[in-house]
Image 1 (tube, helix red, strand yellow):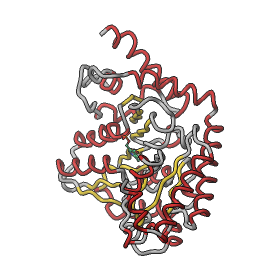
Image 2 (tube, rainbow, N blue to C red):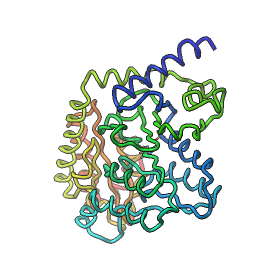
Image 3 (cartoon, protein in one colour):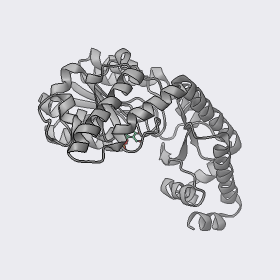
Image 4 (cartoon, rainbow, N blue to C red):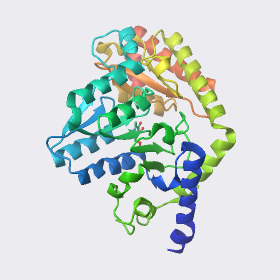
Amino acid sequence: VWFMENLALPMRGNSIKRLAVGMVNCDPKDVVLVPNATSGVQAATQSMLRRGLGADDVVLCLDVCYGACYNGLLQLCRVTGARMVAIPTANSVGDDDAKIADRYSADVIAGRVEAALARWGSHVKYCVFEHISSFPAVVMPIARMVQAARRHGALVCVDGAHAIGNVHIDLRALDPDFYVSNLHKWLCAAKSVAFMYVRRGLQVEVEGTCVSHGHGQGLQAEFAWQATADYTQSMTAGLAVQVFRALGMERVRRYTHSLAREAAAALVQKWGTRLVVPERMSECAMATIWLPDCLNDPSLALSASLLHRHLQIVHKIEVPCASLDGGRLALRISAAIYNVKADYERLGDVIAALARLATQDRARLRAQLNQ
Ligand SMILES: Cc1ncc(COP(=O)(O)O)c(C=O)c1O
């Protein structure tokens, strides 16, 4: 108890102040710390239970909605009877890469969100939109999406799991209803810590994912002491904010964005492939790239999980791999402040060697992948 009262609570409060004032431009009273983006988005989603959602209502998300948050929406719909609508962003089975890339545009995505809001009208009560989607990595036209939802009277939770430290966040300008971002991703805080912003008028409706001593006493009390746990990550998150501010956020972003962009261009050239998402929609420290065609040959039946495991275990390369658009494999590279060009050159060589085996010696390729 001494530790919780005298160290954990004041240090968590200090992390909130540094973050709110120093990095996301909002009042610290509107921000709480949660263990991860999933629990922050879920707390926002669960608050909709207290808004009398019913069978006549609609909740919206994008088709690229992160699986865990999507499940939270499904659960909300199961309990309330509300209808779940996933807005298609850009994927469409069968189109060629150039057509797919063209559809990743701010106008197309914002237009599809507008169209869904117009189609379902005042039935739409709640939306969860990613600031940057996980796979493929797309920087969404989030300000336009938030404004569109507001015009139609729907609440919006922005899932910015990948945003802080990666792209600029200004919550006064964006003015969402809820905003959640992981500090343990691009800000290099220890796992597990994320922040959740809640618009002032909605705070009484948000309950902690673990109902504890502060229950019913306002947002700060609700989340301050979520039972006995390891709070060291959130206690030290303020230090992560301080370190990044000292490095200079713009300088950090200049480095990570250009490293991702240049690495992606080099990989595309080496593998003879294309970016899944064009540069204009991926202005962040991530890029998603199609694998060479020979590794996507259906007769090879190479799965995302097998390739991911091979890169991770055999080559010590951590890179998300997924099948998109009817089952073709793509990789998502990330450029953190500790990454250098050589990291991507190694990835480029490993994939190029696998691609050579796919055309010249499939038995050896299979043996390598299964080792
Ligand atoms: C868009 C998005 N939302 C939510 C999450 C979940 O983050 P966490 O596992 O920290 O809750 C992720 C993780 O990568 C993500 O990319």
